[in-house]
Image (tube, rainbow, N blue to C red; front, top):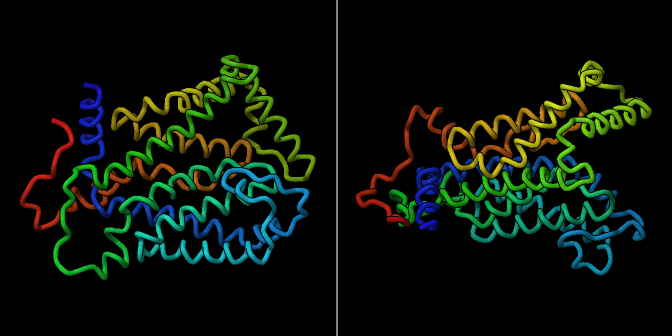
Length: 317
């Protein structure tokens, strides 16, 4: 019974997904990952040359008994960028997709093994892992360009392209849910909603930046005397984070949650100056928006093969 309800909901929510939708997500995540690694190339190499006493492996980097030689890491970094480019172009994706997703996972775990752990890139890595093992290069790719001529064969499963998008949405929502659980699991518990903890954290961050000469956000300076504003922001954050899985259940709630959470990150940026770049770009929320955005921009046009003479096989009665 529950299985049928789940399957019907999934088909209704993501059954309309087609190859171009998944391909756009591949290009968005792959493009951001390429920019992310390229702009940090020199920094990553400097970290790899740090003293071995600073190496505390996390994630898959725990497979290493000692740090890699800097030259070895640079080769792996160049290989990651090459695979990233092929991932973006969609060439030999059956092999490139999984290989790149695992290489990106290793590189960012290795980067976090030398200093504080940066959680802001977790969602990017998780989304690339899903896309790397999904049929995300069946359109808008070199594989599709060089494939045999003729209309694409329609998948027999209605969620063939929809399940990865569904999984991306679930993973994204769960990352925020975990953040919410961490807040209420702290010493403050549900007292976090009072806003006092947020106010103190933001004030400490502003003081630290002022001491280092970065200045204080004018918006923070205006907000600080207003305790009610921090209580409202804390309550909103908990609703968006703890309620994230529930917002998945209905289309308008999903879209509203993605928009609200995106705006929350912009609020963090304007108040604290913290740049969660993948989140601020909105690309982390693209799986939520891709279907309605595609329909809006294409004037309601739906991707379909001219050979679709038989209905796809349903997974629920």
